[in-house]
Image (cartoon, rainbow, N blue to C red; front, side, top):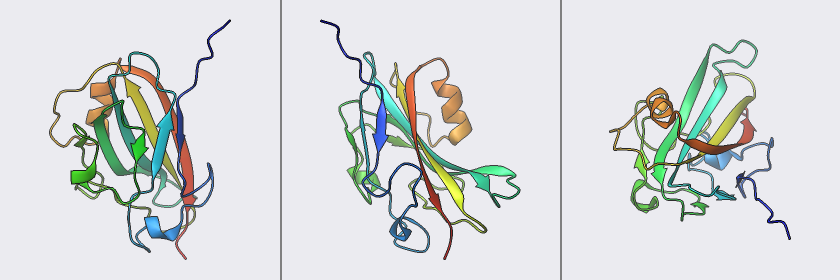
Length: 162
């Protein structure tokens, strides 16, 4: 009998893959983090990292940058996800936060200045627990993860201001 390997999966009960992110999770709502769930971690996973960003900034018709909304790392592999509106003190034990492009830690929801933007929730399964990097930005975290990514998955949602 062959063993079935499960692929890394990332889902949210707030929106379907490729679907619209409800306003509650944006700057026009409560600006709370979306609930996330994952499964299928590869063998040898020692920690997880999550980066949420928007490659369509500032205008999807002529994007010039990727805006980072959330940076988390050293999420323990025993965690099966993150609840809606998770606060720093309620993150899984050992999870560390990085800085978003608002220059602070924590979740910053979609707040596009023009058009419908795509938001990429990217989950990485790592073969190490990273050292405390302080409050790294996305680039610094990606450098620290280099060579340690066992698997990655992304969930994409969209949002346009009303």
